[in-house]
Length: 111
Length: 366
Image 1: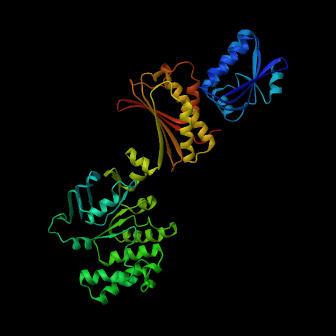
Image 2: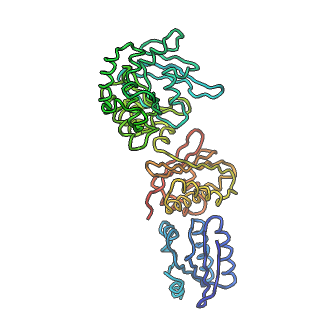
Image 3: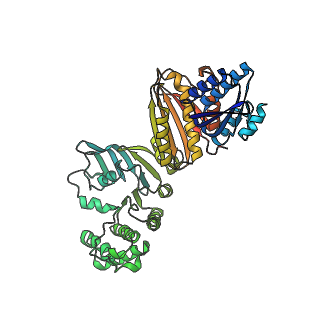
């Protein structure tokens, strides 16, 4: 997994590529925790380059939502598709997160 | 007609047949199937005394053919054999190949032997090839001549040792249809074959051989539709499997994934199926992780080529407990939800002192 961040429209866009699984989820959780603790409480997670997600990755996303709730922040997901979309469908995650078809759309949903 | 009791055959330390006991009755067509190198051909060759058994008895119509006083040539006349590689006399014409045995061994007149040979060549559809030599015939034609030659000796039983395995697919049918015809006419036959559809159609009884024993036997419906034994099932359904043993929570998920990917590539599984399989395996391992400091998990992925289905079997040591029971699950049930979505069937059993969880992967995921 590779994780890149950039600031856009007063939010932080986190682009993940590769796999979000039992091996990489702890690393994702650590990075997200650090971002939130440093004051970034409006987050768009871009899944454009994410090929694979398992329940461990989903737990990482839930942790992010929980940490943001506690700080009054929010997160939107962008470009959820393919295998990742299938796993989201299985676990009902479409109802848990707001999702945009692009980063730009997800950014508008944060407001 | 033939009774084999406790037959064994070994070459030095190599045990090829162990304690084979079977009976073949007059008019029966028995096919012998199983993986290569499991003793099928050796069993036939022992019956015909081309190989001398290391132990046990073979009775033909009540006569012990392993008795030193028995006339082996006479036995072979009663029980003739058709080989994989035809074994025709290349310097003799088709007609001569058929007449030499009856003339030399049975004392038949040349005229009578030729009349009989023509009749048999008509039976196998080669009456117009009487003057041809074996190398002028196709493989399928040569094998049909070999069958006719075998019939010329008026055997009571014919042993077929993989009669079509040296033939092109186009020629297999012509040979099998001749054997079919003999079966309809009531000829007693024992046939070693890899042609499963043929074995199913022609046999009264099927013997599945593995590791030098008759592992399972029964009517074709049983062996091909409802095999009782696991190895028979694996053979019939052409199951390929991959097993890995996990005995520590620090297992290398990516190394395992790489091996599973190689396995999937070998079976030419679609990418979607591979992804679902990898996801299922990861979710299963996550559920087993809390137990891994104290148990050993054997995870097997079995692909049935015939039905194109993937089965995942988790066998674990430890106390009898289903790791998927909600009481045994840690955290949430996200992993279990994914597992249930990816599979169409989950079975738990406490079997032979092990917890056995079996999953059938769904074929078409949305």
